[in-house]
Amino acid sequence: MMRFCLCGGLAVFALVSGLAQADDWYPSRYGAEDTLGAINNLSHEKVVQAARLVTKGKTYRLGVETGRESPAYSPRTYSMTILQLDDGMGTPLGANRATGNDDLMNLWMGIGSQIDGLGHMGIEHVYYNGNRASDFVTPSGLTKLSIHELPPIVTRGVMLDIARHMGKAVLPAGTVFNSAEIKAAAKAQGVAIESGDVVLFHTGWLNVADDDAAAFMAGEPGLGVDGARYLAGLGVVAVGSDSWAVEVLPSEDETLAFPVHPELLAKNGVYILENMDTRGLAADGVSEFLFVLGQPRFVGAVQAVINPVAIR
Image (tube, one colour):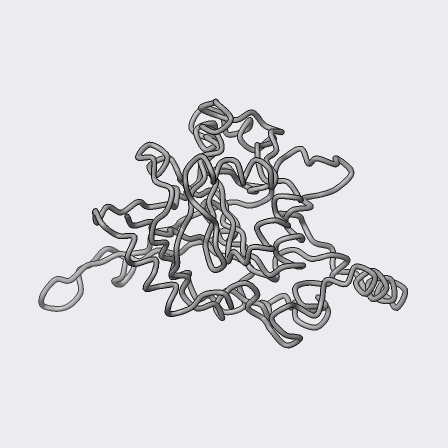
């Protein structure tokens, strides 16, 4: 969620090396050459298990509408231009008088409902599995950790209604939930989080965007660092929420900038799903479901606009 400043210098890289080794967060548990992170916890068996959760055939689109008015982290914007597929003058083509339209989009990928890839945020310009920005970040795209390299994410989804657990329709900005709250909510809903799952949180925060985009972007309830570590330790593939950053803002420690992002992405290879529309699942009291995401394969992309589907 941060703007990046790619700066060099031997002193900077010496500091990076020292900090990374002292922190001991790489090589990854999935191997020193791994580029997929927690997606390694997906399996054919997990897909079959998740498919058995489908008993009603009801589908839920988890993506929100993305357009010019979508709240977004500055300076992210969206624009669309419609072009006619003819001679430019509106003249029909051929004897069959064929006409058509095409669309030209100019947008930031980190807008609306999105998946954050492992190349999105790191620590001192070091990213997942010790990959340095100078080795894989280029102006024309990432040469490693790109979204286009990810397989489809088809697995068991778990939705924890944290708002309901805390007795509110919409949790206030700055409300944090960590391992204790996650365990309690899961127990109350009778669901256990497993390796290979995608975990979503319902906080009610997306409702704020409908009425006040500025307030929506000014802060949010969300996941704390302890909660992120707990979920990563369970082997979840991705963590998402009905908010634009997933993590609590302001942060628990206000001297830290988006600390949950590098904790999940860089240190643990866990993907982040932002602006997930969990309202339908919450209204129906759904705790587990089949989660399906075939993310766009834009070569070199850091992140992507998505519309995952939950099926029960």
